[in-house]
Length: 173
Image: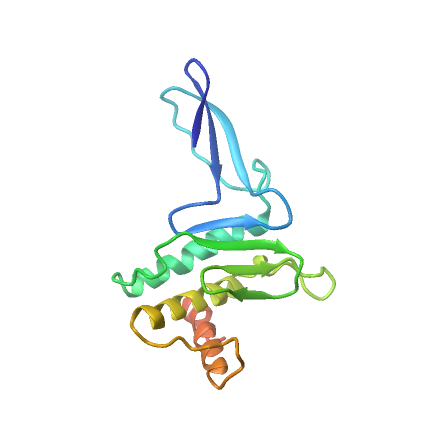
């Protein structure tokens, strides 16, 4: 996003939001990078905690969500069911992580027994995988595995979601 600052100068603002993901910080302001650029300038933006307002957990979620999205596409180029701006919530005051049917939440943890769930690549992959699996079932005309009501399908859904982190690491989970 650019805004005219003064003649020939623009304010360039970048956020952790793209075609396939939008990171939303429930515990504070969303991460952003902002700088002034001149007409015709090229500006490379490197997201790190030293020069942006972003917290590491938000950057980590964006990076790993895009990694699993691209991994899924490398397996099946025709898979488009996750080609929307998935909302990823970080910083919520819970010690858990979950997929809600359209996006996922990674709790902040309690900093005693659990650190932020957004800092774990395998948890990010697991929650995003619930989306891959659920959207595949629904869009292929199948009834989704209902992992919320505690039925027999719950362990299957969790197992299928656990497959993705192990597959990406080429190891068992």
